[in-house]
Image 1 (cartoon, rainbow, N blue to C red):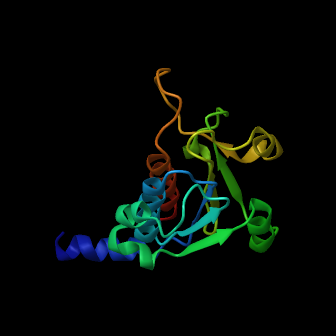
Image 2 (cartoon, rainbow, N blue to C red):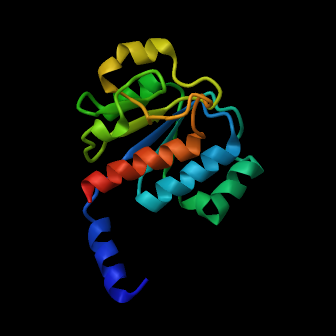
Length: 167
């Protein structure tokens, strides 16, 4: 990257705010480690809602997060309700699922938004999606041969769209 490109990137970097990535009951340590790296790269805060399917001391989390894991802004929560009450009434939560037709790029993301993702093997609970139907988003998939994308891939797609919109 030359000086001009680096300068432009630094100007863009300051223009977006803090996004929040919420993982509800994550099950696969390397996914969480990779998502931690994505959060660090974008300045996002990572929220882990338990119970977790692993310990944060797990070597696989640290291996996937490499030596960056110690710098990730990560918060742990007992429940989504605890996180939501701490975030306040004005906080906007978007729930990512395969069970809606609204594409993620149709959302207008704002500084401070929360991007909520479910467990790798089952996604977000139907009751949660029904309660927040107006805030459900999906990543369109054009093949019927797959059920969903890898969690870290999905987080990267949506998080960088939010950053793109703010930059």
